Length: 233
Length: 83
Image 1 (cartoon, helix red, strand yellow):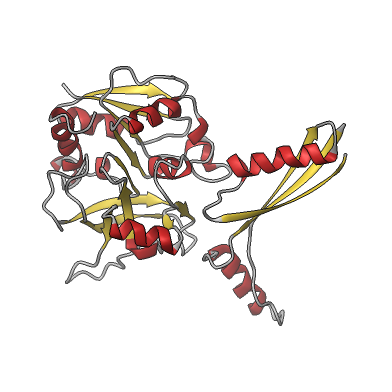
Image 2 (cartoon, helix red, strand yellow; image 1 turned 30 degrees about the vertical axis):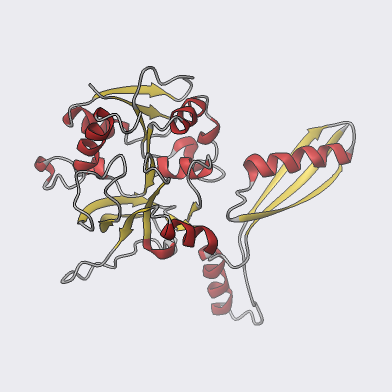
């Protein structure tokens, strides 16, 4: 059974949904404390959403130095699956496991609503169960989600196929598509092997039909499939 | 000796600073003329026990590079003085 560690930092608030999404997908999910120095025998780790350390200084800036992050980096370097959702994405950027940074939303307001995102890459550890170019509607909830990087980095992300999710307009809807002013409409990115991924939307929050949609659940079924096939880990 | 180090962390010029823009608009609405640009950053004051002002400054520079500023989006300025 695929073992997935979900890290709880002081101020995390999406660890329960993440654990449940993994369990529903058939994985063995374990909550790991930020002070732990190893991830047990985990095949994958999720850094969940929330406000670690109250977002003090910059979101993710203090969490990146938590003891558990050494083990997260070791897993990433070994080709293991590392998934950062929202605050987890911010932490991965601060830790330089992914390039760029997440800044205050352009409109200076917290944004909590559904967004339409296109799956730009289906060979990452958490997107294999989506169709190439598929557009899904899942929620965001962040104040600091505006993806920023210099032009050279952005060009490299596009060229190397490291943009994982992009905010898009769905024809027939009037929803403003880019909710925070992210450069190039980027909602999520990954490393070259697709094993370290980070994104702002919350698939774990819309992952069972009882809530009206399970559009996000395939992130977790994808993860189970990828890890079980031994491609990551 | 105790050294007081003033750190100013400023969003890199060229990057959108929505907070600065909002303040610039508010200042214009209040009738203040001639405000060409506003950028909002952070001021961090540290009191450091070090052998010299220069040593304290070097230490805080390292703190800025590792934690206090994000090199992707921010620049920092240091000023050190005996406390």
